[in-house]
Image (cartoon, rainbow, N blue to C red; front, side):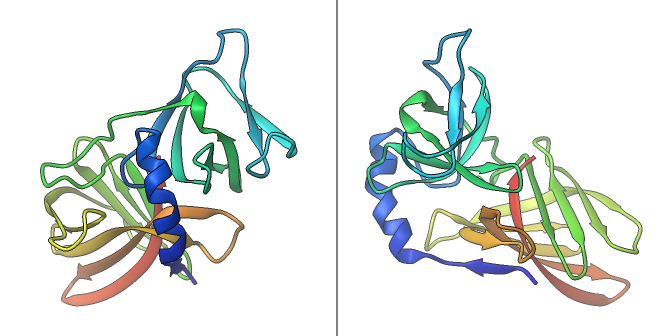
Length: 202
């Protein structure tokens, strides 16, 4: 069962360091920069240079930054089946692909119990797949940004509607925490079913 978890206090704590590093709202796309061509950026288990080194990122690698720590020096990213930390000073923000309505694209969304997936391609084509049903291919008909917040978006794909929000989101099955939560109201053959899930850069 997917459980989006809104951590308001944590969000407030990272707003100022986020803008000081050149980031806007989270999640944010970034690229590893300032690392020598024959070197790599260490991926850490915690937000500390003394923490366990659990992997490497090559120069030019692209990552999705979920948040910064309170100091603004460490960036939390998706890593394998969980999350990890990298030094924020070696990241430069990238322009995220957006729909005509300003909604982030290039995302894969999904949920469990039952398993389902939604792919939002950068060209606004889509694919919805529910366990046991035939895939449904379509196009993003429209999207719009909330009048109350810059990090919530509504959209329609055919007869289906959804809401995409910047929230801390858990899939309920792994230790991984995502930065986007989604609610998808899928309409087929006159029936409507609501699916909840998380999204990430595909």
